[in-house]
Image: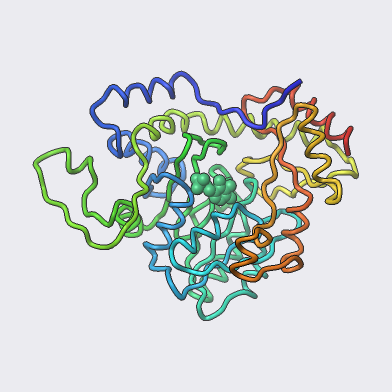
Amino acid sequence: MKVEFYRHGLDEADIANVVKVLNSIFLSTGPVTAEFEGKFAAYTGLANVVALNSCTAAMHMTLTALGVGPGDEVITSAMTFLASATSAQHAGATPVLVDVDPATGCIDPGAVGAAITPRTKAIIPVHLYGTMCDMTALRAIADKHGLFIVEDCAHCIEGERDGVRPGHLSDAACYSFYATKNLACGEGGAVATRNEDLAKAIKMVSLHGMTRNAASRYHGAYQHWDMLRLGWKCNLDDIHSALLVSQLDRLDASWTRRHELYQHYERGFGATPHIQRPAVVGKSGHHLYTVWVALERRDEVLHSLQQQGVGVAVNFRAIHLLTYFRDTFGYKRGDFPNAELIGDSTISLPFYPKMRDEEVDYVVEQVLKVV
Ligand SMILES: *Cc1c(COP(=O)(O)O)cnc(C)c1O
């Protein structure tokens, strides 16, 4: 049997939506993007959404629009995709990595508190695998020290913890619609925020610092535009937005199926002492299904699963051990033991709505066999 690591869930309606855009006059950021932004705002319960071309850009633009830049420090997790840290650098700030809760892999609020300096301006919590960080604790720390919170929600659109959803206790929630994410359009992202002025500032810096976008230049009587500040170019176009508009209607059904698959895996692995799984706290966004195996055997298990036709991935090796972060910031092994242990033992298994129950059974069987 061959079980792909990921298969997207795009359907004929999504494709038809794209064709409609291709047959229209307008390809870039226009009415379809606006439609998606409105629908995503309704879904997240956050009034303002700006669609961008990646989550990396979403975090970079949000920090920039908040005024975070050179001389400032931004605290984020060592157990994440590198973009949680590099987006702070793109804004001109210095990322400061901290360790994670060994049970969930989410940023440890105690470690965040300990890393705060007079230069700290923001925290980027990462809702790893889909389980939300302890936003109540992070909110208290941010209030005490006057910090912004910008959430990396690349794994968590649907999650909730302690009655809190992404973006509801922070300045902004940043999402990814990259090819393998729970809503996927190839490359895409968005910021959702309660703060209307922040959304406007993000919109402007993400379009060259210009006062009007192409759609508003195209529609109605010609009006001159101005450039108010140096910006970037990372708006999302209508072609990509078309894939998201109709997919969003199926997101809850997709979550329900992912939750079933999660339960199926959990039943399958049962109480085996050979693999640990991350704790799920509250409602997970269920982006990844991850197992933690004995670290000295991780790569062997990984390769063996691949040989048995099971698609695998590593999300993630602790980022402070990547060459760039070692060289640039002097991080070394031993700095963040919990993130290192997870990074050395983690294997992500196939996990997506199109996955069949027999495929889960096969993956479980192969994992148990090799461990
Ligand atoms: C995928 C991912 C990102 C980056 O998303 P892009 O849309 O590719 O920029 C950021 N953080 C985490 C945790 C991710 O998994």
